[in-house]
Image: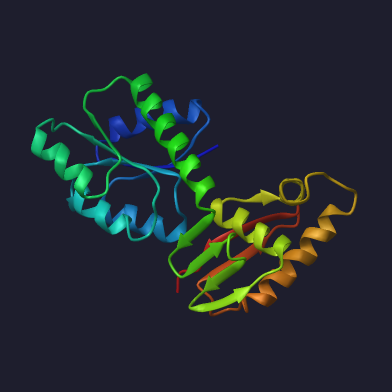
Length: 228
């Protein structure tokens, strides 16, 4: 299910929204300030952002402009403002939708679903993931990490694309194998281990790289940003 970054300084509203969205199956990451939200963006890229306009250490619209340099994930502003000028400013800063407080949670859910559907459709037309210091392009068959561009074998490219599309999330080797090969076999764990080992070698992924692919003893893999 999609990962949502909820940026809201009102603890009551944050908790209500978080509980509701988690009950709907979403993974919700919370931040109560611009600084906290910026830090979370260094750890993972969300599928959608719910962004309050008035935050204790800055303006949500200004933060949206910064966010747009890192991701094209849909942004829905949550605010008490309903003036036309504020709505226009929200869209000009990179927002995709605008919902005024107080709002019905089912309306919020519908807005989220609409934005996620639109984003999936656009991603299907442009099979390219662009993260800070990492780009994965299925069309060209290449990846760029820390300024180094390399062509990758198709299976490795697909694995990297899958991991990058769920940055910061653990993915089981069986799910990776099924996604890439379309089935599951007895030796799938070893196959994925070998694929990822080769991928890391082709990317020249080392201790100084901006990203790392970590694994668990259960055969789960996660691509995550390295914070130096």
